[in-house]
Length: 76
Image 1 (cartoon, helix red, strand yellow):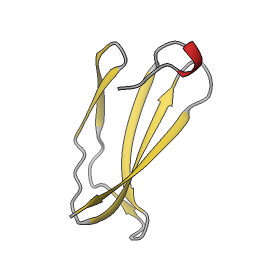
Image 2 (image 1 turned 90 degrees about the horizontal axis):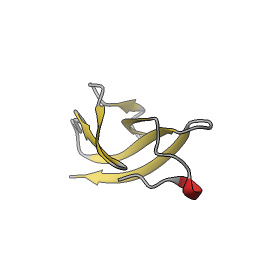
Image 3 (image 1 turned 90 degrees about the vertical axis):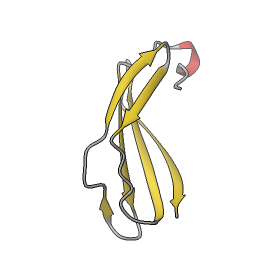
Image 4 (image 1 turned 180 degrees about the horizontal axis):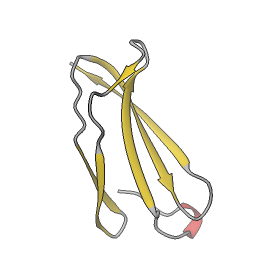
């Protein structure tokens, strides 16, 4: 779920990717993002092929420049 920033419009596009900074590599496949409703998106194709810390990157395109949001997850 993405919320509009400061009352702005819903994002025009959203992309997602993941990488393992400690290993200096990313995923083997490109994930896809589909719009599921008002402010709702679904990412598919994220394959975490090994355990460790993964950093998710979300590129959100609104009416201005692309904004990158990141979040770390630990895969066991």
